[in-house]
Amino acid sequence: MNMKKISVIAAFLIYFFCLLFTSICADSLSVNKRLLIINSYHKGYEWSDVITNVIIAYFNKHAPEVNIKVAYMDTKRNNSEKFAQIAGLKIKKLIESWKPDAVVASDDGASKYVISPYFLNSGIPFVFCGLNDDPATYGFPGKNVTGICESDLVESVYNHLIKYARGKKIGYLTADKDTQHVMAEINEKQMGRKFDKIYFVKNFEDWKKYFLIIQNEVDMLFMQDTCVVNDWDREKAKEFVQKHTKIPTGATADVMREYVLVCIYKSSREHGLWAAEAALKIIKGTSPADIPVAVNKEGHLVLNLKLADKLNIVFSPTMLRAAEEIIKE
Image (tube, rainbow, N blue to C red):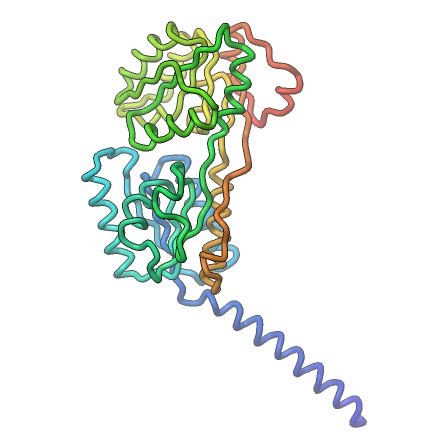
């Protein structure tokens, strides 16, 4: 073999091993790294479960070496300020002892009771998602904080409901939780008008009581996250709305899609995927400050034909084709 061929082969081998070394080094960025997922709610709550599962699945596929831990705050079922503060302090201690390389904070509780009071502008990077309130409320973004905000598609639902309503008065029925009080104000801003009647309910019996009352006070109704009230019964709730609904109803939460005429809900998967991608970038060396804060864009239309029949409403063919889910049972 002549020297020219040897030189070519040698050059090729050097190039190949350089590529291999670069690849190994890139992969090794994830070795022994830790990701903490803070779930503000509880296991079994669909919205945050999807976010958590999407993040875990993303890392299992793209960075399986990363050690993942999930911590639950349970602030959806426990609404007291004292409980939330104690839950936040427990997460603070976990972060300080476990020392994660990145933290994903799902929904407002984690931002309000963990990031903002303890870790804002610290050396630990955070990615928030499912954030209802204005990020500036918590001092975001910061040098160590980025994320994706949760924007309800309330204006789109309102534009659908008003087509079928007998008048312009609109009501709002939701759970008596801190997040829902905030969301009522945010939804009014998004819709560009005030709700004519608002009721916050604590339990299933109150929900049934005010569901009946508010329908005689307004022409259309938003129901947001009432399924988190105490002793909620899914099947009984479905039967109740089918029997007693008299006006067009709507929601922007996927957990409410079975109980309303029109639901356009945000994608928790979109939040989970965005947070996972941002967290992996951070673990590989990107600063949170270099990842701009985002707002969700996806919307999913659900139409309830059973309620439509009860209200003598006929959806247009265009609307039926646009629906991703049609409830018939």
